[in-house]
Structure formats: C-alpha cells, structure tokens
Amino acid sequence: MNVAGHRDKLDRLVALRQHLDPIEDFELWYWTTLTACTNAYNACVHDAGLTVAEAAFSTIPGMYVVPDADGSWHRELRALGDVSHVGWPPVDGDKPDDIVRLEHAIHRIEEFRDPCLRGDRRPDAGIVAECDDAFAVVTTVVARRLKAAA
Amino acid sequence: MNIERHVELASNIGRSLAQLGPDDHEMAIEAAMLAGTHWLNAALHADRVAGEDEDVVHCSMLVVNTVRKYAVAEPGLVGALQEIEDLRPLHVRGDVPGGSAAGHRALDLLAAMRLRAVDAIEAMGSTHSADSLQEAR
Image (cartoon, rainbow over all chains, first blue to last red; front, side, top):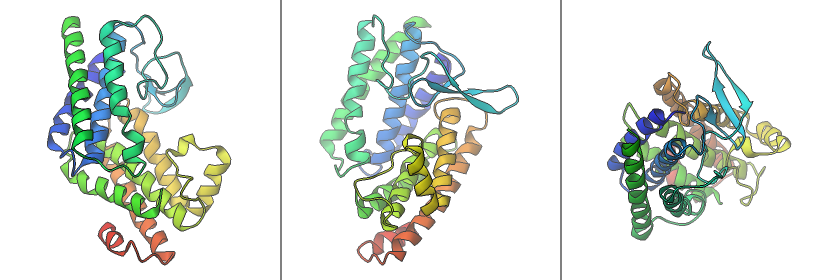
C-alpha cells in the first residue's frame, strides 16, 4: 500500500483508540494500537526507501494479495513490500536511527500480543502505561518523518 | 487455553464492538478475526477435537490436514473464519473499495460463529460457563 493509504489508516486508528477504554476494551484497544503501529511502520520504511510501496497487500512473508482491474484479486509471491507485523518478515538494509527507534517501540507493544490476547495474562495499568509510552514514540517518529517528507 | 478463557476473551471483544463507528471497518474485521478464532477454539475443545494446548491462531497457519480435520468437526466455523481471513489483506492491510461492506460481513460471520460455538459448548454439558454463555447468546 502507498504511504498515503497507511497514513489514512493510521489517523483513523489513532482516533478510534481515543474512544476505547484501555482496560474495559483492552483487546480491541490493544489491537487498534498494534494495527496503527504496523501502518506507521510501513509508511516509514516506504518513505526511507527500505521497502516498496505498491498496491499489493501483505499476508504471510513473501506472499501478497494483488487486486485485479475487474475487482477480483489473486495471491502472488513478491519481493518485500508491506510487512504484516514488525519483524514478520524483517526489513533488511541500513536503517536510519528513527526507524530503529520505531522498531524497538513496536516490539515493546508486540510483547503483550500473545500473553494477553491468546493467553491468560490480564491487562493492568502497567501494561497500558507501557503500551502508551511506546505508542508515543511511534507517533512522534512517524509525524517527524512524514512531515519532513511532505 | 481453556474454554472459559476463550469465551471470556471473545465476549470482551464482542462488547467492545459497540465502540466502533462507521469508518472503523478495519477493526470490525480484526475483531471478527480475533473473537472468531476464540469461538472456533472453544468449539474444537468442546468437541474434543483439539486439546487446550492446540489452539488455532489463524486457519491460514495450520497444516492442510489439520484444517481438514477441524473442517470436518466444525465446517461452519472453519469456513467463516477462512472468509474473515480473506477480508484482511484487502481491507485491513489494503485499501480496496468496499471496506464498510466487508466490515459488516465480518461481523455477520462472527455472530454466526458465536452462536455455533455456544451450541457446541452447551452440548458438552458444560455448567461452569453457564452465565457467560447466556450472555454470549
């Protein structure tokens, strides 16, 4: 997806995140946060020239869904474009410092994915604070990078 | 993970759906994926087809024979989850037109999955989830 598409999703997800209660709606709040992070990351690594922005949508590493002109779609094996999660697949190359900070912040959030959404760990104020703190890094990095690119 | 916890997480997600607005189709699809997976796992555990240490994360991540086995046990649930999964690349990770309709479709599929899973859990004679199952239904 192109940078503008990621940016549009990021903005809407950030707005939704404000409407969700971090504890009462934890599962959806967390997933909204994580999805916003992935869009921020894809926008930034496209902008940095580390991955290709194109109308091919990520699934598992190496395989993309590509829309066809007639409204249908097909799966295709392609070189790295969007990633589905940070690190899945990893983005190689000489990464600018802000991208490294971005990856680190998102990994801090990803740590809670399986324990809280697919396991027995209960959300608490500490988890919410850690996610909020890391997400603030994400929004700062993406705002600076995309503002500089505009 | 045990049935109780699957029901709890799926029900939590179901309650939070009320917070979504008309422009939030990405999270409608993702919520259906997350909650639907919990309902599938709960049903497979109730059917004694998959143990509590054999949770499905995505149908697309399973080996072919495992999908076949689960589809024999719960064809409606597996088919619905696969359809929800197919919406994700186009409308969550992509931006093709039709996102709003896709979000509605995902939630319809989730509603059907919830009812089928509750039936499966009740059929196993579970009593400890009675209150949460009543709420889910």
